[in-house]
Image (cartoon, rainbow, N blue to C red):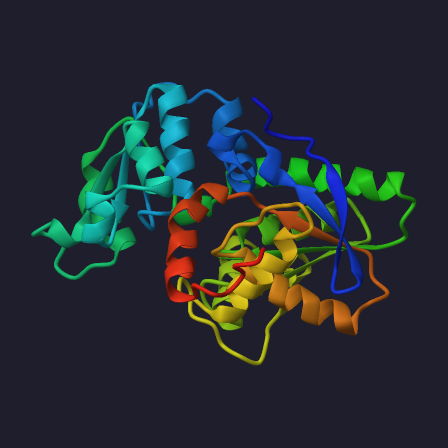
Length: 310
């Protein structure tokens, strides 16, 4: 099972050379950042654990990877979601279908009479965890201290590549949800005394939200990545024509990217490169391609002419 040491390939986007760290080539159970975030769980024993608990979207990459982790470890996965849309429940696809096939118990909180309007995390902490034994709880998206173990390995791979290329400096760019990977990457580079900086953009929330996430993981500002933002505000999960267009553009390089995080990542990166053309940049491909099974039909329905010639 390949969970580390992915290649770095060179592509051309808008006339700029960009290197791509191909973490999408990791094992499909944990493609991309979940292989890094969950490496500690995969490589260590957890005596007495029989249940894994998580929460998030019914199409989250973390749901599928946690279901695979539970299956490999012989655990039961209870995964809480705010709501499962009827069309997804009736026509399972993508990460949701993959998790079901792995035996995940996906719990729709909108159907729980004792929820009382509480957020998923509050409900789990107040109603579920106090009554559970032999349980391992993983916060949304793998946002926890355990993630540092695998992300540190990723940082070491990037640092070694920089040395092999004889580069004085390097910029690593990635889009962020909770910012866990970006934060632990920057923290690792700082502790390795490496001249690599991490640049990211907020996909799930805004810059204020993302910086708050960083602070919860580390109050040391030296560990915080540089956050960039476009003038236009984009809402997470909403379909935008420019997202679909840039996704089609970067896919022409021969590498397939995912449709939830990467489009905003590439929009931000092309803007960043125009102002920082002297920098050598590695774009971190964080996998998540299984989610395209549900995202791509949505784009094709909304923008039927966009990218038809691709």
